[in-house]
Every structure is written in C-alpha cells, then in structure tokens.
Image (tube, rainbow, N blue to C red; front, side, top):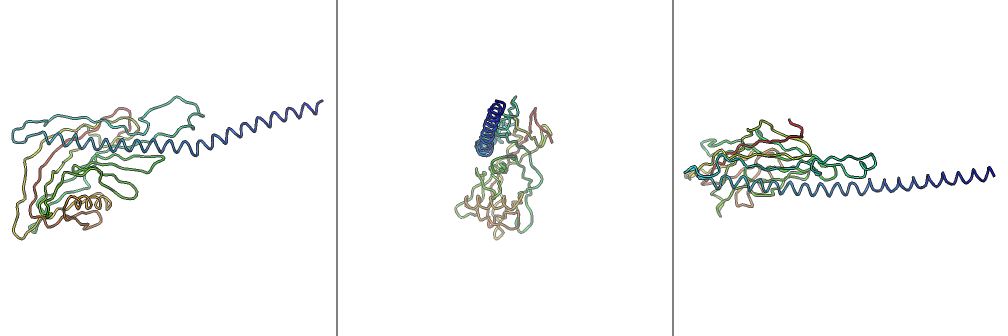
Length: 292
C-alpha cells in the first residue's frame, strides 16, 4: 500500500511539472515572437505619427509667414502656435502590473525632441567672395526604438527629412524652386531662433509642446544678374547622407547641385537668386520628462 501511494504521489508531481513546462514553453514563444511583433507594430505606427506631425509642423510654420504682410505689418507676427508631440510609442502610459504581465507586453519606446543649431550653414557667393552666410537651425526628433529601426526626423529650411541607417531622404520638399534652365533660384530662408524657454532638448515617453513664434518675414530680396559672374549656393550640412539628400531634392526641383565635400552640397551657375526671410523663435515645454 505504501508503494502504491508513493507512485500515485509521484504521478501527480510529474503531471504538475509537465503542466509548468507547457506553460513555460507557451510563455517563451509569446515573449520571443509575439511581444517583438507587437512592439515593432507599435513603433512603426508611432514613427508614421511622427512623420505626419512634422508634415503638419511645416504647414503650420509656412502658414505664419504666408499670411504675414511685411509691407503693412498685418498678419500673425507675434502670434505663437503650439504643436504637441508624443515622444514614446505608448504615449508615456504607465501600468500597475505584476511580473507576469510585465513580460507579456512590449516595452514602450522613447524619444528626444531637440532644437539643433550651430553645425549647418547656408552660403551664397560669387567671384567677389561670400555674399551671405546664414546658420541653419532645425527641429529634430530622434526615436529610441526597441524593436524597429532607429529613425530621426528633422525640419530645416522649410523641408522635412528622415535619417536612418541606410541614409537620409527628403519627405517634404523645402520652399525652393528653380527656373526651367536652372539658372534662377527662388527660395525662403527659414531661420529658427532657439530661444523661448531656454530648453534645447527633452527626452522621455510623454507629451511635449513645441511653441513657434513668427518674429518677422521680409519682402523679396534679389541677387541680380552680374554679367559673367554666376552665383553659387553652398549648403554645409550635418553629414554626408544629409548632403546627398539635399543634392537629390535640388536636382528634382531643377537646380544644378553636386557634392563638393563630405557634407557639402553646392548649387552652381545661378544668374539670379530671389529669396525671403522667415524668422521664428522656437521653444520646448514639458512637465514629466528629462531636460538637458
């Protein structure tokens, strides 16, 4: 009888161990396959949201200078427009959950929104020397994705760009155009002053507010033709992939652009340049985030 009872007890233990083993196998498959797939999908959707946000940001910024009349002073000068951006794929949400549920769902990604300045330049020159040299500012979002490829979106000179491991591409064209022969350039120089709150970057998963104020917008300025002395535009950019992106978009718009250095795009043979200034102050505001 003692032997029979011992065998029955052993069978129950083995059965319980087998059930635990099956549960662990199921959990392992879930964590290895399902959780990364869900996390990747969340991050893909979030980066699509970020792209739409930058597109809307360009439209908002353009609407300020388009509706301002520098001759009369009428329009939205001095008006601050606010745009909100969620930094993480799960919107900074927090959950009260045990250890089991914690591993059953993907980790939310985070991101950094920053105001970049001081490393990129816009220059116009001819044989007499440099006629204009302006700093290029940008609003940049860098996603720290856990399951999807790292991506960085940024807005500069009125265009929206995407940077990732295989290079940089233009998502929304800057406010540049060229005549059919490529010898007359028309463009808007978007100057971003990183003033306002004094905060240059915010990291985290939650919501951030970006305030944009139009300081002023100028009337049309012209570099008029000078016989036998064409103008050159030099764009000194953050890296070679950015320079290639600018070369591609300028060529698509009809300009004669080439790379003339590791991070420089040059537009040559310009007889005439028409340009406007749009000067903004951009600031960042947030509550629950990491400031730098």
